[in-house]
Length: 360
Image (cartoon, rainbow, N blue to C red; front, side, top):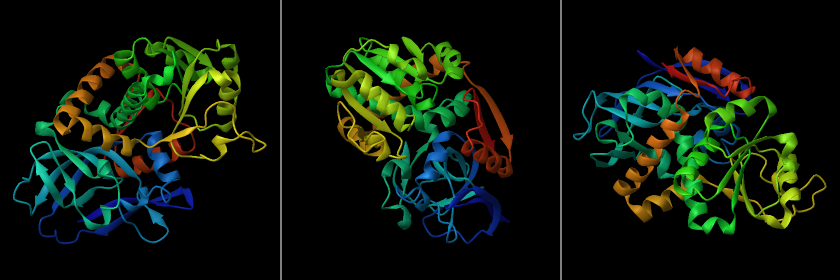
């Protein structure tokens, strides 16, 4: 019996292959997880695109020049050398595009544990934390697919709203969100509707996605990109998920001094998004990168693990109600399907109304 993994060439992401490697004896204090399910979303493509710069390739080692793309999903303990973790227990967390993963649980509590494997320690604890489903306030056995598809991105949206609300929305009365059909943008819009109802929510999206975004009911107004300049110029905060430098430039030029804050989410082409084509600075505020793991650490430090978890869970349940029926969930068996879907995502060929779950 071996471990099946999907290896991706770091310098040519469209080259991905299935590889089987032998299972090694389980280390003392370690736990072996069988990967049960994970989702493949555009978020996973981002992990691959910026893998070296943000160390996403370092979570699950692969041969030189190759990488294993991280996924969010569920796994079951099939072997345990840890006294507090039983065979058969299920967990949720950061998993490889693979069939198995060995972890070394530390800081074990009824709600979860950290993987203390040495090579993972330089990375954020947000990615090294595994929740034990038996005591997880976010877990709903009937909504596991939605959690994998939306959950990690929803949390980023939750943290963006928490940050902006903590800053008094920089005095703005309106939130401008690019790539409004993306799952992170929908999460942000949902939490803003719940916790900051006085802030008007405007979603920008491609013309082909306008109907999809409007149907979500999460925005006060949905505008196609080519109609951006028709928006009234009022004091606004923009949150850019699209990563399109030209679009960001149009937002800055249109709102100019009325733009109170410009937030960049995602990490592609940061320098290109900070200037116009000729290299001149954007009008209005300097765009600021939002790195969710750092904000997550600060949030849970402020509220504690239990209370913070309850706050996220409450907002998550409201979000689930809002997105009910907006996506069709597709369950695909096997890691070959994961490889194929990742390549589709990489090419931008997956409809936002599709939610894809892989069951290795």
